[in-house]
Length: 408
Image 1 (cartoon, rainbow, N blue to C red):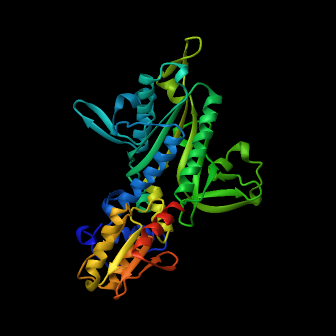
Image 2 (tube, rainbow, N blue to C red):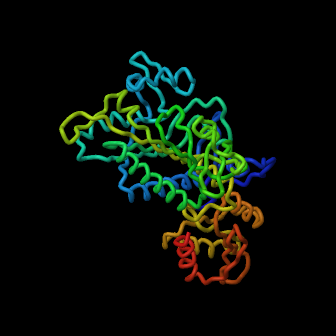
Image 3 (cartoon, rainbow, N blue to C red):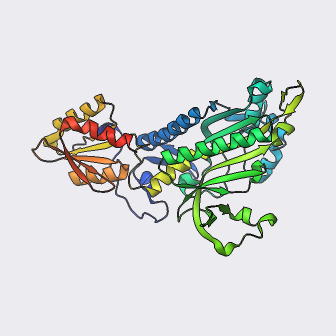
């Protein structure tokens, strides 16, 4: 990407909070644009970071044999009436309804109803089970308390997945596979998370876990037993069956919820009469699981907690900064990197000083930086997060960057 053609300009960064500083930089530099409370547009770099997060999810989920689908964002009232959740969501104010002369609809806050319709159409026999569908797309909820920009908004990017199983044993096995997939996704993204026993809330189901990223700015409180590693949400600890747990032995900390998995059971298959033919040919209700990752929330956590973008999701590994005298050399180097499939940014804006260009490397959170400001053709590449510098020839630069990417 050439910054002269990107539409991005240097802005003076002012009044950053200690809470969501990374996202505030995105807003002040125009990388993130707020259209209304909880509604945002994405410029090139954060958009591509989000697409790379999605790519990580797809790669892991495909390895586990989950099937990608695409469910409608605009959903008819009828399927929500069938599950008996329309009035609940309307009364809570969560739903964004659309009322027309030809029927009522909603902007999907979640997709249990829609995926049940998909399963009813496609899964007929026990021989096809288990099946896990997943999709990555936008969801809409009329949040009354938008907080932390992308942390909690009215529109947000989400991975949601749903498993259809023969019985509880089959559901438990799929649930554990999904749990393993989640841990692999977050490990690949460089996010150290805890799986926390949680309350299922309005979604329903008997068993659920939240995947929490420890952060002082998190809006959730979790309690961890350092001896066993078991972690709990406050809602779970407050349940009667857990009153015997000694809270004095638990460490309390703040965290951000990045994902949630549920064993739903038959709640939706029963209300929507979703069945398959068992070994005896008799209609049998599916045992369902439900699984979600807040993709745009993961993006927010990365920007708020990392000095540079993790290599696993960084769309551009290196940013080239140069003086006007080195413009042609910088352009040739940029072309060389592109030809070798290395994502690079060339700061070719002629009206900018070297100092301002270096500051923009940090604002874009590019992992590596090359400064071309002298007459030497020897390249010095700097790890922006650590400040470590390495001198390389042009020929060895590609191998260095590919090696860094592979080791991430």
